[in-house]
Length: 217
Image (cartoon, rainbow, N blue to C red; front, side, top):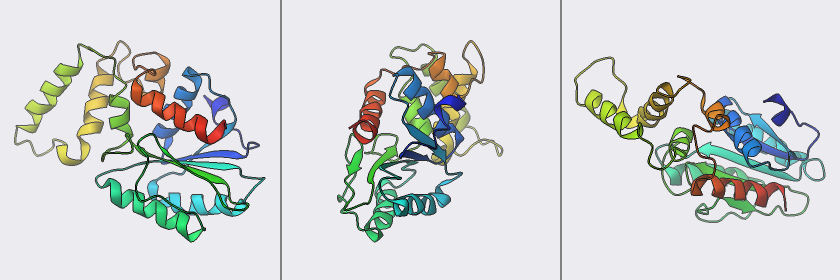
């Protein structure tokens, strides 16, 4: 996968929260045969994202032509949106009041690079990468109802060691589903390569179109 990641010479940068985001995005780019013209950067956590964004904005054009930001909306989409907008406003960007349903692209003023924002899963609801990946499960999948049933049964039990569904259900769901595939425990990015997941779902196509709007004008 390294051939889809280490592209430091390109003036297009995609900042993601972690390694799972990196490999899922790289697999989507590969499956859709997108132009290999942007470097995907693992920011090693959402807390490090602000410094990573600011540092690359300050490099300016022509060194940096466009920056993509992919991060989880988590439990409060508007709070996450506001936190990113505050960073951009400090750098002189005009920001919309809410994220675009198909991803946001903001034109840079002067030598500032263009900036794109995608809030996982779909720019309109709280959630995370694992929710996005769950939407890529093929239509009519026969295992999905059994995963739902199993998790619901566990959640009904008073088991001290069980996961907290309020915060971790999306992770529990997709990783349980992946554990039941032909090759159990396949990582999310590789599951796209192996076509366990459908890269042609509406949500995935919207994400691809956002990448093209940002990096392939």
